[in-house]
Image 1 (tube, rainbow, N blue to C red):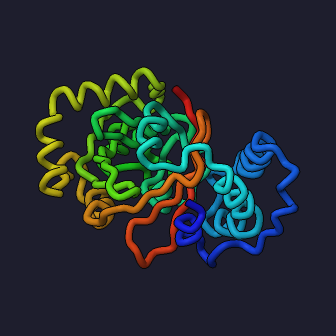
Image 2 (cartoon, one colour):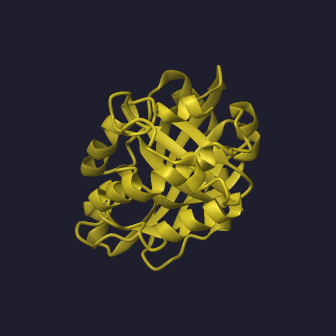
Amino acid sequence: MLDRVTSFTPHGEPDLDASDFESWSTAELKSRLLALVHGRHDARQSEKLALLDSELMPLFTALARRNPTPRVEDQVVAVQGVWTPAWSTIPFHDAIPGRVFDQSYQIFRHDGFYANIAHHVPGQRGGLMEKLRSVLAGANLMIIQKYDVAEGRWLIRNIGIEVAVVRADRDLDIPAAQAWFAEVMAKKGDRYQEAADLGTPDLSALDAAAAKKLGKTFKAQPEMANIYMDADLRLVTSRREANQRPSWTIGVRRA
């Protein structure tokens, strides 16, 4: 698994002295990792990348070597449930302003679908969508994706977007996010399965500006690898296109 991990690292495998961490327990490594990113989820991208290269990558490497769930087939079972990104370098997270960090969820279902869901509060340096500013509303944004496993790799397809206009001050908790995802799939599951088969996401729910931002992303077929996964922590590397620098995400289980 480590050979696959190093193919995603930004400069090859970090110059790591294994003795730096061989005496650390896995719990200590995880605690150190989360302490380093605490309060830094909204830092500038340049600051995140600097932190990644200087301090986080050796910890990622150390944890990857101890990955208790290295088989992708086992990860499919282990990933079911709700996760929140504790920290990420995915540029998309900052592409649409207004995302509420602690109301952002990734929900995996057993049927091969998962959703990235977040509550957004527009009007802060541009907001989520121009039309929402005029009514002083908020929005819940759901990006629906289809996942499969083949030859030890995750296969990810972007298949659709749902937007719900809500009061900006109406929180989106986990039960509400799960219920929304379930409701959408109950009503539109056949359509989204067709979208997964045809590779044609429906962006009609978005305004022109948001659709333009997301359209290029949706045309890509993302790569994803869980380099470390236990019951409550995921270290995920991903990229939208093969020639891009990979992004890194620290996911924490919520339910």
